[in-house]
Amino acid sequence: MGNRRKSREIAVQILYQLEINNADIDDAIKTFWDIHSPAEDQKEFTINILKGVLRYRNEIDTIIMKSSDHWSLKRMSHVDRSILREALYELLYCPDIPLKVTIDEAVELAKKFGTEKSGSFINGILDKVAHQFSDKKPAA
Figure 1 (cartoon, rainbow, N blue to C red):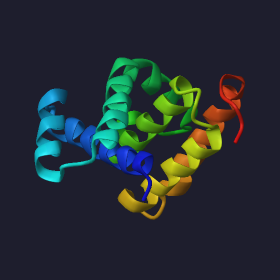
Figure 2: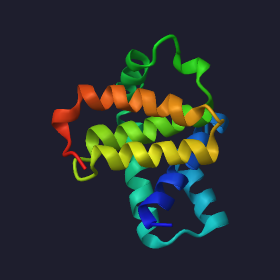
Figure 3: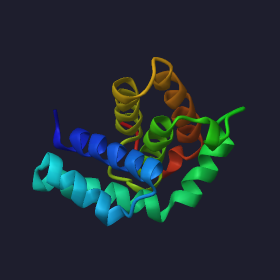
Figure 4: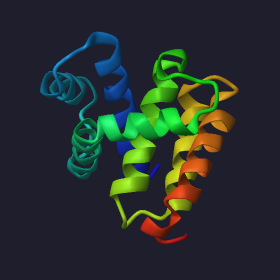
């Protein structure tokens, strides 16, 4: 597994933990590092994702709400919401990561951590957002 893929997994797990426990981000990160000991380059990309998601969370959540027909944020599972936030941060604020990579990685995370319907749900929302913001990122 590539370092960025592993970093995305870690970021989603920590975002989930923050949702469930209402924990402080620094405490959540330290706890995860203490238990799992990821590589330094995984830590760097993970922290970039986490800080970015938290910095732009209101904007990201607004986009999720506008792009998810008949689904409020509260109705979404914590896992799906965490994956969407991570992916939308990448999609909107990481121009070096191609759209296709962001969407593919999010769908894989959904398959690994979500329900059997999570992959298609997340793909649908991200595809909709990607079409709205396609001028901001390079195609794969």
